[in-house]
Length: 126
Image (cartoon, rainbow, N blue to C red):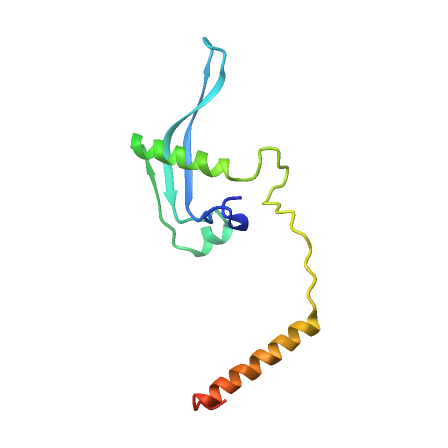
């Protein structure tokens, strides 16, 4: 997934490249996607977005913009989950983390004591 684990910037844009699949019968190379237009907007494509948000979107058939968008989406796909992934959502395979509750509580007590000391030395009420 783009942006996961800091391997690349977090993807925030909403973009959809629309086109057609064309089969090359003469060369027998299979189908090829030919981009024709690009949709850009703010919508997250969720029910909440459709119901409660004021969104913006546009469609363009400008060839240079369509080509650039297609290349951008292609690069994003290249840094995303592998094509063999069967997970509907990003599946990070993270290891479980165990927290030492007493240690964290001690750290928080020491931090609070330090902040109180700083406040007193700066003449602030606590």
